[in-house]
Length: 213
Length: 228
Image 1 (cartoon, one colour):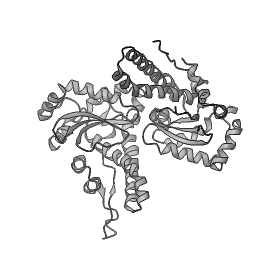
Image 2 (cartoon, one colour):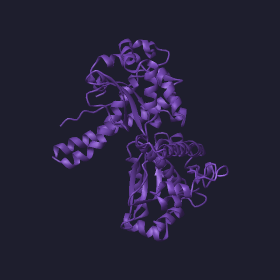
Image 3 (spheres, helix red, strand yellow):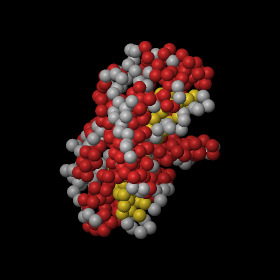
Image 4 (cartoon, chains in turn green, cyan):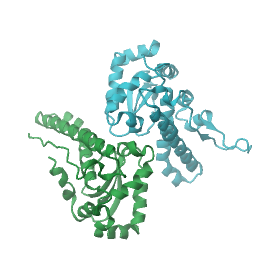
């Protein structure tokens, strides 16, 4: 059975483009080392899985599932994350780049500021490694969800944008001051991409993965 | 303090009262006030584990991260003690997380020591015999523990544990700050949270897992083993 091999997607901006919110050193390690490790280990797990399927070894297939979930989730989450960030000086980083999404956010939370507070609180309440996401549910409503480790959102909801709360996402710059990281990440959210995902379905959000096969 | 903590787990409040807690406002009042968990002192200087763990990591890890768990634990205990069952239930995950963080780090500091003092080397005596029986050799224990650490998906810890029911040693991993409880007694823990190594080792966590064996305090581990 032919196995799809995933590759590390290119960042849509240079490593230093998100400064001062996220340092170039963090971005380079995060993309070229951490994300690469998820891609490498996902490909390894899928190759082993394919061998196990070919051999009719159901025990081996089940044993590989946590690795596929973790590394596949890591690849999905980071691919989405890079795309939903933008340099602070770009027009995409302004909330006006997402008129329909902003209207829905205000309608749901009362205001953009109230939404920001709720999202930030959810990020800071994570216990351990994980992510915070704004999702559009299949019924159309907006919701803030947090996920642990690299669990991906694959239940039919649309990930509008995500924020990585693993310590490797901020520690070299912010040390234990994760509240400052959360405050500064708002300056580099790519609202244009968020608006596009908001209008689309789950498959549209995952198009970046298709192009990294 | 960690041995006191260990003996009394899971009677967490009793343990904290007996060890790291100071009666709040003891001078000002004669009525009983529940004590507060406090940050234990490190048994060595922040720079003492260098070059294996940098002084900067140790200082942040102890003074900031561990302190946050201590504060979070006290706040969860206050909420629970206030008696509103809905609020108490909502605080239970915080109690597990921050209480676990306080327990785990307190044990961790004490099972480390400078390489120039008790740190590193290999276990001896009854502990060495038990390790040989249950793992085959010290080298195998190191290999298995490092594999367990590398396999943690997210934040967590790996522990050398003794099963109280049959005396055997094994390796256990825990997610986030979940403490080792039940029939297992934690003898030695290694912190696999990124904050434990990132400033020095960045994404090369395997190097941190290799290096930390140079500062394991086998005297502490042996003493926990004998008391377990």
